[in-house]
Image: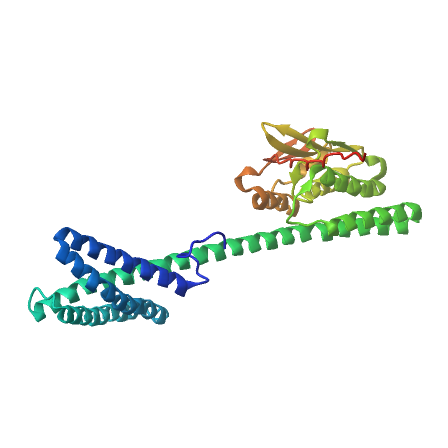
Length: 364
């Protein structure tokens, strides 16, 4: 739950309440002593003689307000605070009785007994009310801290679940298309190509299952997986599919969500390559622009103009993964034209530093 001090650690509410009660009563005793000092030596002696036993008993009685608040926390607010108010008054009256009796024993009464008791009851009601308010505020703050932590945990679990759900949308879709292609090759008795495609599919799925959907991968790894995928599809489409991958060396270690571009490449194959009777070029590019990382998937197929942006599972998947991974810093842009279809993803550029190499030790 992060770093907390003793007053906000809800794992030990009783300990926190004791510390708060002790601090409150020490502050009251300090005020009592300072006021006696300015009234003269006799008043200071009286403050010291009476103040300590008063604070011990008053502190214990006042601490019972913690239990009053705790025992009534499941009641309705009206009933709860009515009972707490009654507890404040009862405790203040008992405290006043003890304070008055102490003054009688110490022979320090400065007014008649009735006035002394009323004065003590008034002061103790105020103090008990303040202490009850501090306990209530502390409990509310601790509950707020706990709820914020639980909300953060719930959001993290939701994000992980969404990332897994989005990830699981990819593999069945790709697997269905690939198995259909393998089936077609088998029917056409193109067994060598079918066997090659099965080997590439096995390699691709092995890498897919090993990847953690909630952990970043390098652009180099992401492009390698896409290259495997396009190799599989090249068996299916032959010369109709031409590919090009552009990855500057300095961006190879940049961090991206795994399989982020997979739906875009699948769309290019589905909407541009599959319906075409001529060669279609699919390009995957990484570049830096303005301190941000841009990843782009484009195709040269004229049929891709028929794609409706944002309506397919693939584009919606990518848009949602960008939002979950980067928030408002992740953007997607779609470009359609006579030259084909292009999707550009923009996200923060994160290239982790290389670990420091250990010093070279040369044996004598």
